[in-house]
Length: 279
Length: 325
Ligand SMILES: Cc1ncc(C[n+]2csc(CCOP(=O)(O)OP(=O)(O)O)c2C)c(N)n1
Image (cartoon, rainbow over all chains, first blue to last red; front, side, top):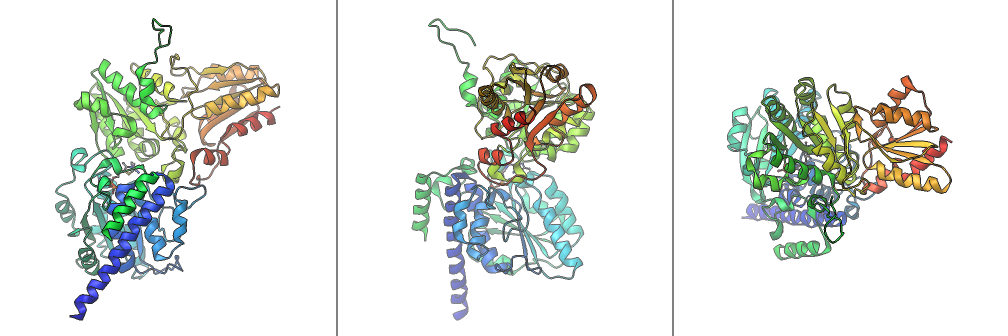
């Protein structure tokens, strides 16, 4: 069955990129000495799927007007975004060593001045509204580019998300997809202990979104849902990706302690060794 | 601070726990106040560790309400609580708890004149590596423009403790501007007296006055030392309360010294410099220089380096003083 093996080859390539996103995220965070480990690693597979399977981009021409738009609303995951942008060819991977450095365009949060970054983010709860504006801009100009916004689960506690959730449905923006990196942990603890979100899928369905839940670390499921977008005609699509905060580093998984933490030489070596064992 | 039997000075426990971070001394003082006063309640916004509220949460779980990443909601809840006689202490990041919740702040807290104390951590460009979304260099201007609001900028962790305790019986809403994660040089005494609205003259001097707040106070002290070597006698005022401004301290400096330099980690528009200039323009026109963040967004980088790039270091205060001579 050549088709199946072709799919496996595609998935293997994407898994390799995802592993590299994790390695490169650690590289950037180590260069910085401290940073948002957990939320970068939970998003790594999703970002690899988006940038190497879905988004239509021209890394050599970052301002190409028909490009798909991606907004990392949970901007503190910038180590992973920087990693995937470098891997996609927007800039040299060596620039990851300038994470947080003086005059660098790679800081703790994405900066619109950096090649490939569509919006400066970091203050939580902004991305979905911005994505609506981009999707609306496409429609008003008869363009077929698509807009994807990635939101943190803790970030959903900001009320602005729910204003945007209403607007996207009212405007029937089927060219807009939101992905929730549902890693169940925020800065100070587990979501359900801080300010619970459940029943999450039902909430979005009640707002009128087309909703699909996946394992955000299963590349097959990632690819399938991306290939199925938009999930329903005339509706915005929501992907709830169940993930693990700190995925790929045993010591950092499923704990708020690694939301933002110091990345010493020792931590870096340990993390790389664990990734090596997974490859 | 009291002397113990062996002659050593007892350093209170909060000093070491605060580890020279005013965001932590604020949390420790809120914890202390909660023990003294049943009406005190801390409202977090996913900030339990940022502000150091774990001890209070453990000892009095009902006195810490963290509403998650929802600053507007937190502000409204604080206002509602205050109307019932509770004394809420809101714990947030300076850029988000001010700008994000601005309408709740204006209507529900300032306009309704409710006793809400707002602690804003990571002010200025203390989180310089975070980039512009996380810098708070307009918060003094925003808060100062609200009637009823008291605005305090603490210079170090020691002052963070005393300023927070001073809000216990203080009327009306208060904004306490705190540092965050960057190095905070201790510059005020551990046992200093603190009175809201009463400036501290850190150094007497007759040639020129530097009026500073926050992390620029230690820079002003070191600038004064440099200038002393040149024979310039600098008065340094720690203007920890921006509103209500200590008019007497400003007017005395204008009358007794040859010019005034203001220094703050804030945009040059609408902050401490603006407050001082507004007073002096009417009451005692004085030659002034302003040290602060120019009208642009700061780049990313190590905090000290970024501060220096935008002209907020001791050497810039020295230059400003010299240019008044
Ligand atoms: C408006 C706003 N409030 C607070 C913060 C500080 N902050 C940064 S990350 C974070 C937690 C985010 O949690 P979540 O969205 O679950 O992200 P993830 O687990 O994916 O890292 C907080 C509170 C912020 N960046 N913006």
